[in-house]
Amino acid sequence: MPTHVITGAGSGIGAAVARRLHARGDEVVLHARDAGRAKELAAEFPGARTLVGDLSEPDRLSWALSHQSPPDRVDSLLHIAGVVDLGPVGDLTPKTWRHQLNVNLLAPAELTRLFLPQLRAARGHVLFVNSGAGLSAHAGWSAYAASKHGLKALADSLREEEHADGVRVTSVYPGRTAGPMQAKVHQQEGKEYDPARWIDPESVATTVLMCLDLPEDAEINDVTVRPGR
Image 1 (cartoon, rainbow, N blue to C red):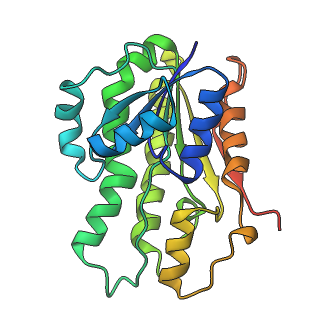
Image 2: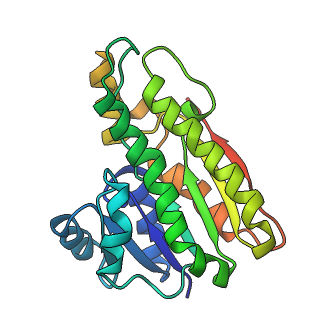
């Protein structure tokens, strides 16, 4: 039974992925920002394990995990959590930049570092749910896009570094996907939000599972998912 460590399982794409893996009997280890959220996730996914650590404080993740019981085996590490705050460069404060860089880039790098021994032993898979903003930046998206461009660089470097140890690395670049983050983006853009216009999180989850389930003789490096409407 494969073991998957998942961030962002509380909503959107992360929740869809966690539901699919949990339903088919895989072991899921769900990352939560605090004990209260961990309790909610444990109730939603009976039998699942949880790990607590605030992604906005990547310097403290090692300490947090050292006081818990991380899994001995990790077949996949799925980085799905993310935050977004839009605004022109002239208005963004260092606090806004740091928050997005911490959660979207530094925390995934640190969690990957911490779980690399288990991933190498299992010849596992690191999967980053990136964004279309990780490939192209537009006005108002500088901080978020910078964090996601950095996440692409992290994945590309990690792939070359860990290839000899059999660790596969995939970046998934979804377009606009229905969910709480997309609702927040529309609010910040001052636009009406219609979830029917955008990708269903289940469609991105299907893509993620396709990457995870690929036979060991092949690897999907990058895959882009766009709205079909």
